[in-house]
Length: 153
Image 1 (cartoon, rainbow, N blue to C red):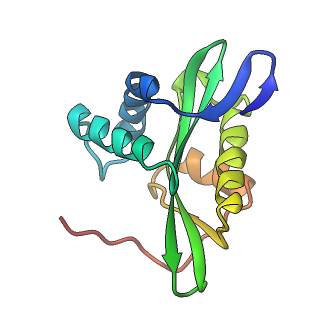
Image 2 (image 1 turned 135 degrees about the vertical axis):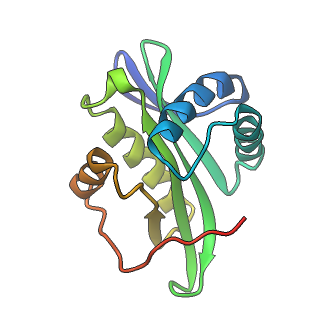
Image 3 (image 1 turned 120 degrees about the horizontal axis):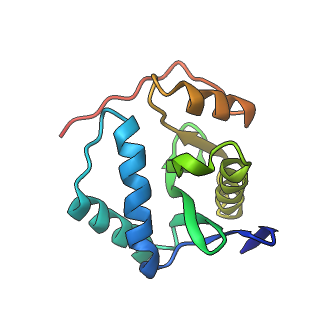
């Protein structure tokens, strides 16, 4: 757990945080047009993330004891890297809390978790039309790649 200031804490999520996390995911999925809000699916996914904490992590940002941000990560094996990489997902800060450094602190915290796990590379996907997020990641020294994301259901 990292105390950023007397009112802000970055910590690992717990099962009793799920309702707050669902609210943040609804904010995120309202921006990302590839995803839809389905609380039962998101609840199931969050429970799976919290049950498998060896290779999965959910970090939350609390401000005055209220969860205002979250970021998830999962460990994968990369043949390109010949080792562990981390997939960062679900990075979201509540609308009223953006621009205060909370996202920076949250992302640094999840990056630290990934490095502790031995990650040689961090990767994430962002909606190509979410200009504020893309600008944020650029400020955090994330680089664009030539890869595109494809999916199949």
